[in-house]
Image (tube, rainbow, N blue to C red; front, side, top):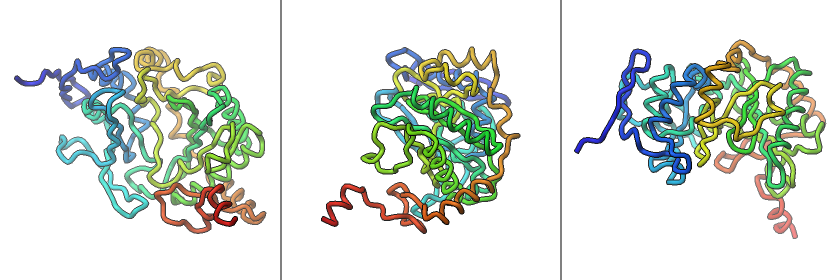
Length: 336
């Protein structure tokens, strides 16, 4: 017996949604069709967030709570209008990832039970030159979303002193992401190094903050994850639903709203009404391009003071200037 399906007109395309009544969020009852319709309801926002970016996919074919498939490669069998962008991983291997240019492609992916969309900070035209610096504010055990909001306020002040515009959103989990558009002139190591210098400046201004890569050194502080700016590191996009039982969304908010919001305020069910009322609160992001030169000056200042690189994630080869990539407690045991 053929599987049930519905067909939706999305722009000039017809997108087939198979098994539309399949429940993806068991605790809430929302189905695959609900997920597809959610993305259609925030269409302008999700397309802006993903536009021309290689995008990795988090699929939940058996629903949230089942196995999560982290899919970097776009399926070879796909409609001709579903586009791809080729990327190279730190290992030197490459892959063709989904590259969104229209809303129908998002709906097509949602039909595959893609809940989370994780785009690169660069675009297809030159995947090696990021056009976005990402400030990932990540509360550690013993800290809360309120602590993350307090750190975000310091981030905002620091950006203002640079004359930069940052665009905050909830992560949809415990943290906050702030995006800064930059000119696509610099490679990943340079952008990451600038993000590290920025994070260290915020750390100097707030005792709540740590930039320590090793978890054993972070304590009960909020980690600013500079390594989210390394090649092939991605975060959930604006308007992406998260693979949580409560179907939270990574929700763009204004700076003025941020102190009063909670992660759980924004869900697959609640975001469509907000979007219908406010539109995309980050609609101006592509027009607010910032010059990285000032942070390059901060990097030069740090280097002159003897403050250099910090560890990369483990899947990376040893990088120029990187300190020994050994957990501090193990290093102490080795020297004992």
